[in-house]
Every structure is written in structure tokens, then in C-alpha cells.
Length: 64
Image (cartoon, rainbow, N blue to C red; front, side, top):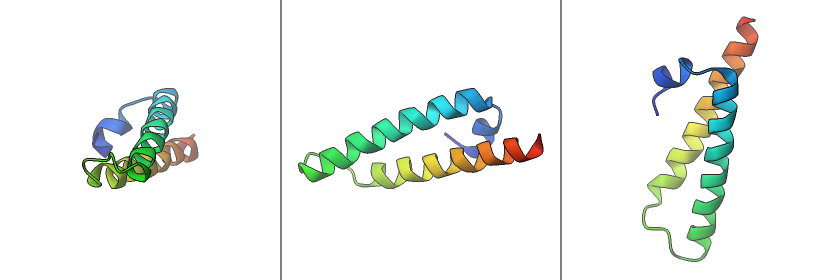
């Protein structure tokens, strides 16, 4: 998901998306540990998406 699309979401939706991504990131790390991960790029992408969401949530909180 791109930052522009994320900015259109509400804070609650962003928090839900962040929780989903954290669960996905955990599963990806588990797959990496058990040598079942097919693409290590998914790990870094999930990590970047989590950071992007946190940044946007912070921007929205600071604006209000």
C-alpha cells in the first residue's frame, strides 16, 4: 500500500492495518527461521509498511 492511499484512511483503520502487518511480519520471521520463506523481500516490505503507517499516524495526531 502506498503512502498516499494510507493517508486517506482514518487513524483507527491505520492502527488495524498496523496490527495486521505486525502479525504478518511475525509469521514471515517465523518462516525465515524455519527456512520456509520464499522471498526475503517480503520481510523488508512489511517492516517498511509498518514504519510508514506509524509515521502517518503520528502526522495525523500532531495535526489535531
